[in-house]
Image 1 (spheres, rainbow, N blue to C red):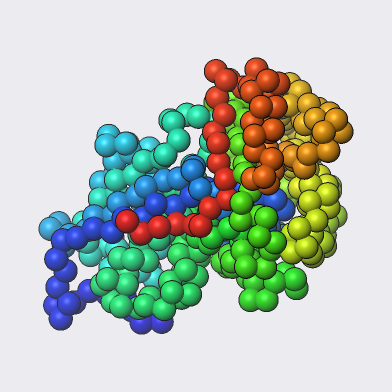
Image 2 (image 1 turned 60 degrees about the vertical axis):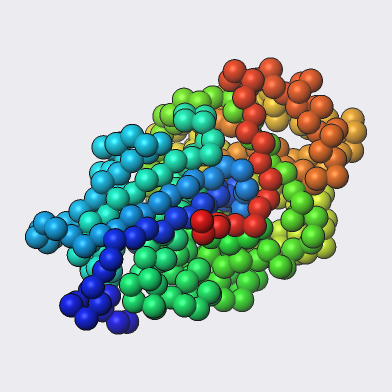
Length: 359
Ligand code: PMV
């Protein structure tokens, strides 16, 4: 790889790059990692549209001498944020050995989310993917090394993964697979690959209404949760299950078989939380309201036959997944029966989207 170092032959004028990048919702969950952010099993997600982060990366030649650290200012919703700055700085410093130009510039990150502060919606996938895309745009502006769109996306996915594992899947439209699997050509543990063109059109018009059961910060972070998988007695069978399921779910999504889709997706959510409950120490992130919603979804499906399914991230909020053609019915069901379980009645309406946008 070329050494990405600035020298006097390519002086830098101050400039900026801006990306909007969405969150994603995993259908087959990544839970358990090793090495440098490598997954124990492959995962598959839908790329969302309305839960996004906008990130501007401003750059200028560095005025202070290189002290071995990236020089960074950080603004979140226009305000300086020391805790985000520290995390971002650690990430950028970890990239500097292979991207030394990062230490030769003065960098300013200005970022913000499309969803309310502390809505209980994780912003690491949208935030890290937006930053990774900005870094790739910057590299390409300075060195012209990422002109090829596939190379650009692949590097963005690698960088996003290094920032926050699941963020690597947000780079691609509609749906992505992260982790080497025999069922997806070119798949890798190092980056995600797009699978949006391998699934039925119905998944391009698909909704994810996020029922916010609690806005509180999780009691156990994802980082700690991944680590607890190392001592979990069910870890190996779980990884084997996820590997095998990838084939079945992709087949169901190709054929538009929603019954099989829903069965796997709901089981994945409950398995994720069951793994937390049988970790040592054990913990629960679901709340009574999460269970109340899940039971109502079962009942609603039995009563109406409508294909509405739930999934959960590592938290209490419930994601309702359904095809666009039944939106009117489902929104009425949410308003009449589910909103009462949400904190301040808050629902983040989201849907499958076309992936990040350079702005
Ligand atoms: O990307 P992380 O380290 O925040 O882990 C995310 C794990 C889950 O959201 C629970 C599942 C997934 O695959 O996104």
